Amino acid sequence: MSEDWQSEPVKTTHRIRSFIIHVALLLLAFLLGLVPMWLKSRRAERQLSLARMENSLASAAIDARRGDYETARQAASDFFTFLRTEFNRGVDSTLSQAEMASLQPLLTRRDEIITLLARGDATSADLLSSLYASYRTIVNR
Image (cartoon, rainbow, N blue to C red; front, side, top):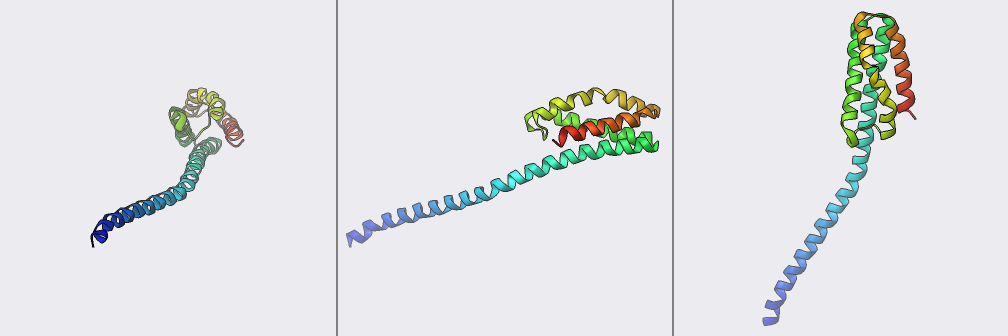
């Protein structure tokens, strides 16, 4: 009878150990499923961010061609704001270091383009179209 009483703590310890192993395996399975979804989410976030920037720049170029300079100015401003935000995010940016280095010269044209759009200058459409082509070339490598 004393043997049954002493084996009870061993059974309890075995059950606890078994429970901990099962929980650890479930946690591991969850993490193994989470990692691919996280990677997919990061790729989708990058594509969305790049598409937003491209869309803003394309809208600005089209609106400037149509002579709708105020709408083009707002869209161009949105593009430059998105781009500046990505630069400020540093390592967390959706842009690679090489893309940032290549896109840096585009930021230097910001004031010039915004001013031309504010004045309603037709040359702004050509500048925006050129900027759009440069952006696409850099980002879609």
